[in-house]
Image 1 (cartoon, rainbow, N blue to C red):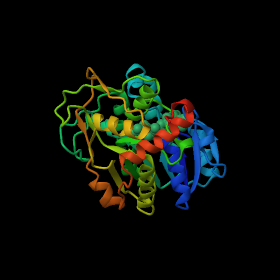
Image 2: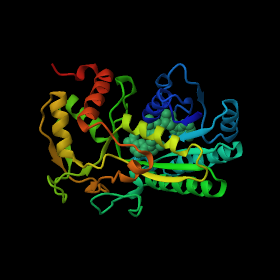
Image 3: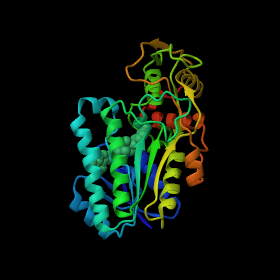
Image 4: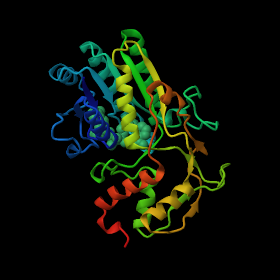
Length: 326
Ligand SMILES: NC(=O)c1ccc[n+]([C@@H]2O[C@H](COP(=O)([O-])OP(=O)(O)OC[C@H]3O[C@@H](n4cnc5c(N)ncnc54)[C@H](O)[C@@H]3O)[C@@H](O)[C@H]2O)c1
C-alpha cells in the first residue's frame, strides 16, 4: 500500500514515515513545512510541499502516487497559541481536515488514520482515562481535535472510509538525535532548557491530590507511538467501515517530580526543582487505559521514561552542544 502521510516532516510524522517504510509500506509525505523540516524526510520518500487546505493539490497527489491510505498528522499543536488564535487553529486543524477528507473520498481512498490527542478529555476526574470517559476539551486546540474525530467518524459512516482516531498522551523521545522534537512545549524539553540555563526546573504546583503533590501524566515514546500507527494502518486495511478510537499511552502515571528526578539523573545536572504556582487548566492526573489499543491493534508500548529522556537528551545536546555535562 502507499500511504500519504500529512505532516510527515514534523516530529511525530517523521517517526511514522520511518516506521511505515521499515514495515515495508510505501510512503509519500505531504507537508507545508510551516513547522516541519524537509531534512527529516528520507531521500527515498517523496516530499510534496503543500497545505491540506489546498484540496485540488491533495487530489492530484493522491492520484499521481496511487495512494491507498492516509495518515493525517498535519496540524497546529500549541495549546496556549490556540487560545490566542482560535480561528487559525480551526482553519488549519478542522477546515484543513475537512478539505482533505473531501479529496480522500473523491479519490476513493479506503483508509484514514487521524492524529487526535488526550487534550480531547480536558480535566478527566478518573484514575484511568478510557475511550468512554466523557470528552470536555479545555482549549481551542483540544476542541479542534474532538471536532476532527467527529468529522472523521461521520465521513466513515457516510462513505465506508475505514477510520482510526488515535488519542496520543504525552509524546516524548526520539528514534535518533536528528529526529528529536525541536520545540520547547512539553515537560522534558522545558526541564532541559532550565537545566542548560543553570536554573532550577519548575514544578507548577505541588498541592495536587497526587502522591507527591505534583501533576501526573502518561508518557509515550514516539517510537512506540509510530508503531501504533503502523498497527492501526494495517488494522484498517480491507476493513471498510471500521471505526476505531483508541488511547495511545502506556497506562502508567509518572509525576512531574519523578520526571525531574529521572532527568537530573540522566543529564548529570542534579539540580533540585523549585515550586511555582499551579498553571490554570492543568489537570491533576491524566493517565490512559491502554487496553483497547492492545486488544484492537495487538500493540503495546515497549519503552520506559528513561529511554524517552535519554533519547530526547541526545537530540537536545545535538542542538545545544554546550548542554552536555562532563
Ligand atoms: N507532540 C505531541 O505531544 C502531540 C500530542 C498529541 C497529539 N499530537 C498531534 O500529532 C500531530 C503531529 O504533531 P507533532 O508534535 O509532530 O507536531 P509538528 O509541528 O512537529 O508537526 C506537524 C507537521 O504538520 C505540518 N503542517 C501543519 N499544518 C499543515 C497544513 N495545513 N498542511 C500541511 N502540513 C501542515 C507542519 O509543517 C509539521 O511538519 C499533530 O496533529 C498534533 O496535534 C501531538
